[in-house]
Amino acid sequence: MKRLLFVAALVLGLALVGCQKAPEKAPEKAAEKPAAAAEEKVLINGIDGGGFPPYAFVNKEGKTVGFDVEAVEWIGKKMGFKVQHQPVEWSAIIPALEAKKIDMIASGMSATAERAQRVSFTDPYYKVTQVLVVKADNKATLEQLLTTNKKLGVQRGTVTAKYLEDLSKKPGMKFKLVQYDSTDLSMQDLPIGRIDGSGMDSTIAKEVLKKDAKMKVAGTFDAAPENYGYAVRKDDAELLKKLNEGLKLLMADPYWTELKKKYDID
Image 1 (cartoon, helix red, strand yellow):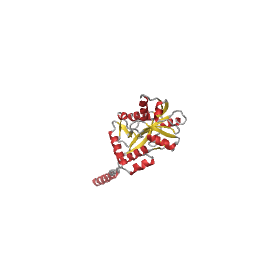
Image 2 (tube, one colour; image 1 turned 90 degrees about the vertical axis):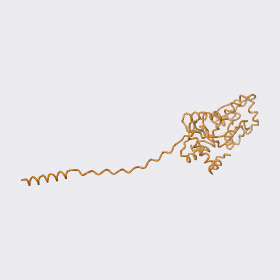
Image 3 (cartoon, rainbow, N blue to C red; image 1 turned 30 degrees about the horizontal axis):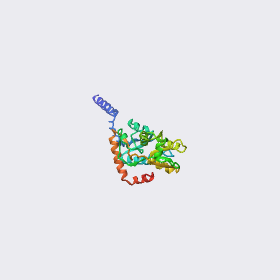
């Protein structure tokens, strides 16, 4: 009897052992995914909403191009950021920068002392003067145009506009200043006689004369030449440093000469 009980217990024990789950294997460690590459920083460059060839403008295909556009894109590749371009009305472009709607201004901006109170400028990369463009058959001298009640157009918010506003207050100056949203608009009014001349940077005038042989430069204003520079917010020292380093690299690279030749920059 004892033997039967022993055998039964042995069988029951073996059955219980068979019913137990085999120990689960420890889950294999999942292969670690490589850390995602840090996304390249994108900076917004504000450009003249009215277009400012050859520095920054939208071409017929709808693409933003120009000397400053390609220059700052080259700098971005060297300094580790991408650039997107945002057209902004010129008279509102510094407020847009201050409000952080854009990160910089690379669009043929004169680095004036007045503007430098609100923004920080890079090292200069180009020098311009201020000129008055008139119809080619206009025989009047610059002095006559400024002293005989003529209507002179200018793009608002520009250095030229500020200079002409100040000039109009000086003794002997007699002209009416007509301000436009862009130089292109003033140049539409000039041929049809709504204005007698249009003030602008010498670089813009060069582009105007290349397109229209019926125009000429009446003269250069008695104003100190202006340096072009890129503008950033006062507190953005890091970006200012990157732009200056990038400009230095660019101006020492053959691409700088290629760009100047491409856009006919002296």
